Length: 409
Image (cartoon, rainbow, N blue to C red; front, side):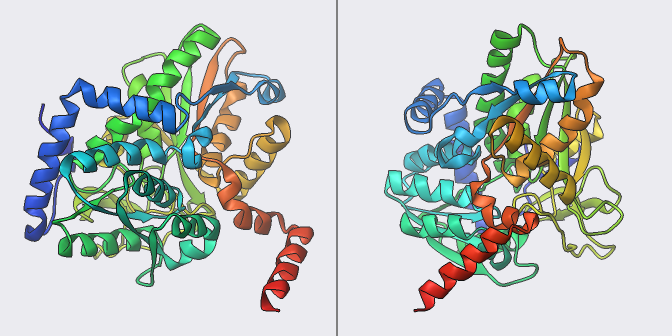
């Protein structure tokens, strides 16, 4: 087995010469674990005893009855340790770091879920950890920053550019170039130079493997459709991979529509008209960029979906029409989140609520004997400040003002 560097027209490894040897060593280490069945056994055992896998597949009966169409099932990655699918990739890379003998890890994070998962892994395995996070995301995701720091991780706010995920990635690469002897970069999504897209997707494939067994056990057959939100692409590829060869199952990725695809305030790379092919951050994919190749500002109510690029694997599947891509606006996301909380008592992350939006639109089209799966990539408690602001909740505002006054005393 050798690492796939390209997926159709996308991917590659466009890296500085200084990193070539580091990536060569990483590629060798990845191939070793990929070809070693004992590694996957060790990985799944760790995830079952430390992270709570397998995560449940919940039949959302109230939502199913509300829409009157397909039976809605929710894959509960929010119940994975640290509250999102991110732990799947991070704990797998942590086992890889142990085999490589590195003593320090670095990571980028947007919504904070990858950062907190990396901080958790570093604490468990006794590694030094630094997480880079755009200043804008530090403000939006303060609870995750608090917990990262309490676990011993150094969180570095990035002030460059749009102060979001793409800028955090750039800063993490700068760190790695100067500390590659003892440091591993725990890349958080299925993007970047090879072998990251393939490796992250492989570690996340545990989601789809579980979901396929669970839906057959509970519903009696495979789903008609599977929905997942799409930022970089790790959670969507995690669940999509298992169903790619199943003709009866349609795969639907949902991007951040922000204020609308005609507003320029969104992060839709594959279902809008503002993205084009380009090379940045070590790989080729569809980027939101201008005619000069300069990256555009993006917008999403969710901190984890406002990335300027997308996995080269997803770009290939989009080009081959193997996955359909849609977009959900900020307003639609808040409405879907509200409905899910009230009907099922489940609090989705803002990222995950994008997938809910499209699933809710399409569920009535299908018969009651069909099933759909929504990958709920994370839980919404990390988004409490953003959600409370969106609700314009007066009691929350009063609480924040009162608590701030107490801290000033």
